[in-house]
Length: 481
Image: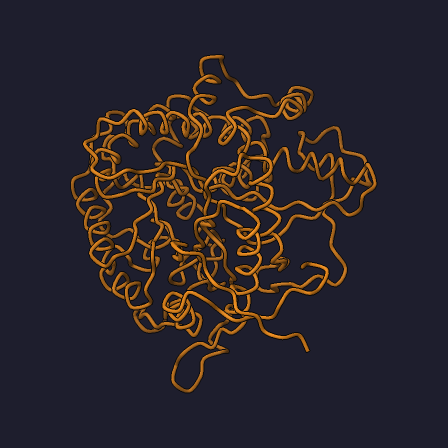
């Protein structure tokens, strides 16, 4: 039987939890005209959301943030990452006039976190593009929206720059356009690859402009801060070492990882990706001045959301010429025989992605300072695991955390510049379409009893981890030593 090993956390290593505004706040306090893209999507297709739950109430964090932050303090979180809802925070998107009620609310949340010795980490966009800008300009297809976003960012820096030392321009900026325009499985359900690519480029430009504005300063901030971006690259594994499988993995990597990693961290797009975009008629519109802004304003810290690997193989079938280009022209998904699965979410569990991604960042991206901003396990029908005292015994989640953390710590031992690990999520919350179907939280949200909060076994384990700064878990098998 494999023995247990003690895994010690590095000094100063951050342990926290993540969430977003739209997945927690609800619509309380929102005024007419303050819908976000997510609100618009939900109102357009509520029947698609699991059991009809959506962002309308979410976890009611807007009204209960003090209660939730008290629980964060009880567990002992070092940090909490959330977002400002742009659609709530600004009352006139063209002039960037601030909604004073929203500004007061976000200020109160930040202050409450700091009072409880919890580092606030603030993301400026976590799918909360104002619905007005989506309907009027096509959302992130518009360069005008880029400029409006930058003005919004400046207002946030001005108000909270003296209290927030970690800023992120976007969370998973590839997701909406990939689901909505590349795969057409989310609102507005249009397959248009060129639009999807333009959204990506414009978000990269918007991020660089926000970094430029933050670095320029002039906001009266009193603390030294860092600004970055949160990406969700996947560790990509080819089916085999055959040239055709290696090519499939390389092209997948271009379209879903390097399209953001390279310009945001290195300041440049991969040349082969540009050639692919041109060859398939979906090159983004740009000018040299914009490319220079991107080059000169790379991120200073990188957030990485990691859940599962991507496994691909060379494509077996010919592409239908009547269908718009899709990156899967070059690859098929490869299902690894015997893989370990989270059957609720349909994702493979492969903790070594932590090590492999960490080594990639070290070796290919200048060993930039980075943090795991999301890692977690969503499980359906968690009430099955409730004990007689009412606490959910989510040992599967504890094992998931330990296994991923040990691989991350191994990478840090080998020189990775990772400064922390954030779980998704602090409480159960609403996810796109799945709503509350799969639960991720350290803390349960009881929908049957007024959204009451109850710490799960994983939350109690996390509390001990924060207190002791180590955990015990099985040792690595010999081939990984």
